[in-house]
Length: 176
Length: 216
Image 1: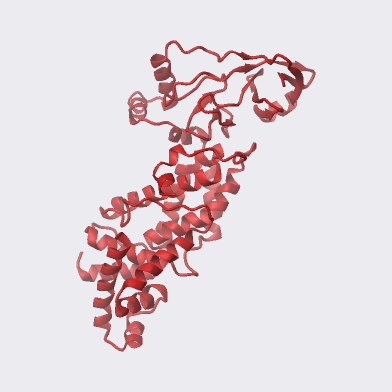
Image 2: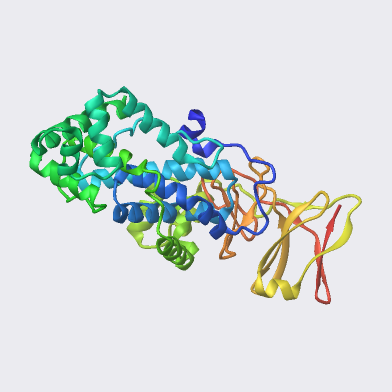
């Protein structure tokens, strides 16, 4: 799979993958949810996720219209998404993407979110307990600083310090 | 960015708002990206709004295919040359291809099967609404093309590696799904990526409203 992702332009033809009348809009609707989730998980908010997703599909439209085979198109969409997300971080904040150098893992299944959840779970599982807890409370369950402080039996100031330390450590794990 | 600003950025993300602009160092950026990964993994999170999905579909529908077509072209030199003289990249490309392949013939010859049968593949009526019609018989896949009232027929098999071409949405060219190769409606290859033979022509005739092609 990694090989496919690195060389999206050299994929073989899938027999029967090319329909005579290309309904690119149906193909778009089939993929837009997964691409949006992929993007959201890398920009972190709705407005930017919508902008970046729109750019991905604008860039990929000729491929959609040409009727590329499904796997080939998925690889192309995620590769394009990665490039567009990297552009976003560079243009907006002058930085690189966390996992920029790594190949995009695209599997035959339609559920990209499954891979991502596994990655997040892996990272959370290797963190120290209090790091994991503060990240779960704040970022997965949406607790305020105050609520998280109560839940963990500590001060708001401690939560603030702890969440940054936990994010820094999680970032290392994601990048590693 | 100070820790205070970093907290502001985190708070913005938790409120599903854009992170305030401005430079981040790599350490800060990766922390915010890790936060984004966590936010995106919430089971109820990150579904696109139906309104967004619909409005993007409308935007894509409105995009002219001719401007999108530049994504098929490789080589910054060609794009830069086109920008410099203010004409479309496709025109420059035509000139580039012709200049670099001066011996390339205008046609790929005629496909004339030994035991061909005249077979109706489309109608003039159909060609009036869809000027490029693809057809497949048992052994031949081709296009019937109506270009300013002149009907032609050519093979739909890419001369690179044999993938089946499709008509571009605006019916101005034939697109290979495999390698970003396009052909003009006259069957000549459009791009400089590969040096390809033109598409073979097919024998065809018009009988009343019917368009027939000599195929097997």
